[in-house]
Amino acid sequence: MQEYKWWQDTVFYQIYPRSFCDSNGDGIGDIRGIVQKLDYIKWLGVGAVWLSPVYDSPNKDTGYDIRDYRRILREYGTMEDFDLLLAEMHKRGLRLVMDVVVNHTSDEHPWFVASRSSRDDPHRAYYYWRPGKGDGPPNNWSSFFAPSAWKYDTITGEWYLHCFGENQPDLNWENPAVREEIYDMINWWFDRGVDGIRIDVVSLFAKNCRFPDATLRKPNYDGHVFPIEHIAFQPRLPEYLRELNARCLAGRDRVSIGEGTFATTENAGSIVGEDRLDLLFQFDLMELGNGEKKWDVHPYDIPAFRETVLAWQRALDWNALFWCNHDQPRAVSRFDCPTPALQARCAKMLAGAMYCLRGTPFLYQGEELGMTNYPFSDENELRDIESIAFLHYEAAHDNAAYAWAGIRSKGRDNARTPMQWSDRPNAGFTTGVPWIPVNPNYPRLNAEQQARDPGSVLAFYRALLGLRRRSEALLHGTFRPLEQPGAEVFAYERRFGNERVLVVANMGLRPQPLDCAQELLDGEMLLHNLEQGPDQTLQPYELRIVRLSSSR
Ligand code: TEU
Ligand code: CA
Image (cartoon, rainbow, N blue to C red; front, side, top):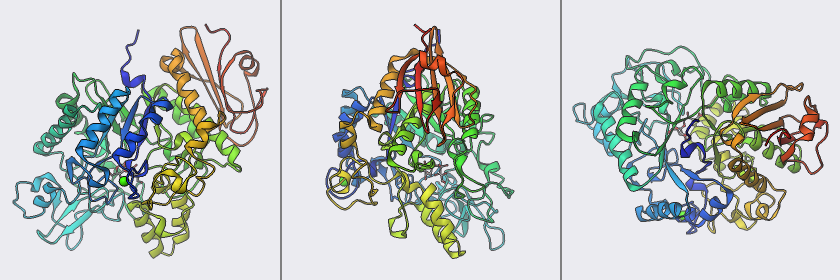
């Protein structure tokens, strides 16, 4: 019998603190606001929270640019508030996972301030400093948020590497002193009582330190080169993760989740494993609506979804399952939903299709309500460094319309609009002026209204999580894909001993025939997202979760 860890039997809920709940009316979500909502989180049926960064930060990338790893951002509260949050969570049996951002720091971190001060400062080698080539940067790499990954610094006349924004210099993981600082910091949080870590862009920790030019792959900007082959999954990565495991994780019952940007089924093993990290976020499913660039808008590719899920279910014994996070558009907005009713049905279908797979579910705040993308049309509505840089770049090249289409469908601010608690002003998120606009659909789409409605998306999520807790097949069962005639039907079986549960989802807008219709109709319907009873045809976005009658 396989033994399971607590994090395999737990559903996680991600909180983006700036947009969750504002307790003091300054328009910014905060830690006391989260404390006020812990009963909601518990009631929803999750067992752990992944908290996006709450550390001291100049917020150039909303907290993913850290100035002090051991201090709470003043806008979010104090270390006392944090300790209160942790205690209140533990009191309710909820665990807390911190977001560890150590591929880079803020350029206001004291290490970087010292590092840039002179070429022989002791902190110089905490970052990657290189001389330029002629008047230009050391090589042709572009960054996620800027056309070049290098920034010239006048104080010492050299360039530093930043794979994200220019205010996010990359830490030099080659330097053992840097690694020791990081392990100390992680252990400091573990000693405080946190239950796990989500590690930001762990796949980029090791770089090709010869810094050769890159060849053109996955450009973020037309005509620029993104150096995946020199920054992702480099040879020393497994070594660093083994060391991190030995210094921080071994022998402790804490969970570790690596954000595996550019992970593939082939390289995933260098992040997850006994002596490395527990779980991996891979983005193959997120990229199915992309073209060559993330900003190219294509319809979500359902047959490719099916193939990709199968490949990952085969590749890893245990997957991290998610549709949303703070970097992704709202899941339901990836699909064509002509009416609010179909949109709600689609949101329920997506939940059932994803969270019955073998693995650990990660929900993102507001997903449980079926929250949607925001109709962005004005630069004043944007806050995200990536979207703003992209808009400026494209506008300067006469492509503003292309940029807006991309931002509306993929922009990260779609996930960051305030949590919709009620139909009161600002969706009950704040009594002040929210730091980012509230989605105008909040009067009809909010938690308070859905909590009263047994047919709501929220009620469905609660039922689904309850079902998962009570079913050995859904928790620990094997996974087997089921062939169906319709290309837009996604179906699979989970089985544990005699218990067999089938999950059948129509991921498209057209009705679809069913192959094993009678077997399904004879089984026990555990969860269904339609008002009317099931028949031989799958309706648009219909989902059925059925326990076969031959089961115990
Ligand atoms: O994201 C890294 C990452 O690879 C992305 O998902 C990225 O934000 C996106 O692809 C841009 O198109 C992590 C964090 O989750 C993100 O919020 C940070 O901005 C980024 O690292 C830098 O810390
Ligand atoms: Ca506040």
